Length: 114
Length: 113
Image (cartoon, rainbow over all chains, first blue to last red; front, side):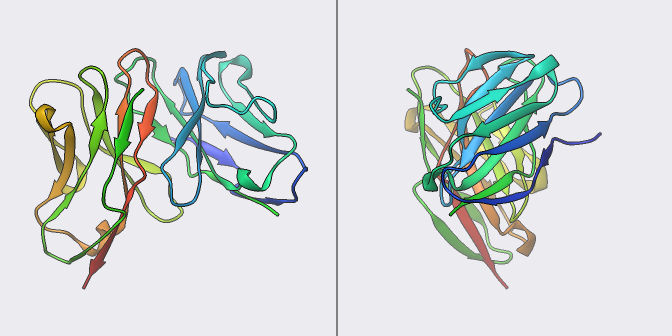
C-alpha cells in the first residue's frame, strides 16, 4: 500500500515570497491533516479536513496560510507571504474517518525562509 | 485544552540496556494516547496507542507503554535497546471528539555501542 506522498521535499525561498506544498493521502482516507514542525519541537496541527470540508483550522495563521482539498483527495497548503518564522517541516497525514483511527504521516517538506 | 509534556529532551543509553521515556498529559477526560517515532529524514511512525481497556499496551519493535491515570502518565518502555532505536520519540494525546493530536516536544534517544 502506498503511503502519504508529499512534494517538494525541500524548498528554500526568501521572505515575502509565496510557496505551496502538495499532499496526496493514502487511498480511501477521508481525513487529511497538515502539521507544522519547527526545529526542536513536536508537530503542531494547522488544519484538518474531512473529505473536502474543514474540521478544524483554529491554529492556522489565516492572514498568510491557506489550504484546500479539492475533490476530497489531494491537498495543497500555501504560504503567502512567507516570514522567517515559517521555516519548519510541514507534515501531511491522513487517516480513515473516526477519532480512534491511526494517522499516517508523509515524509514532510522542509522549508527554509531566508 | 489538552497538553503533553515530555520532561527529557535528550536521553543516552547503552545498546542492550533498558529504556523508559516519560510522558505526562493534561486532558479533561480519559484520553487517547499515542507514541510516535521519527527517524532522521523520515515521517512519523506510530509505535502504539491506547484508547481503553488494558493499561499496558504492546507496540511494534518491542516497545510497550503503560497508562497510569493517577499519575497522568503514559511512559514508553523497551527492555533492551538496539542501535537502530536511535531516533526522536513523540508522545501525543488525541481528543475523543475528533482526531486532532497534540504532541509533546519530543525526546531524542541516542544509543551508545
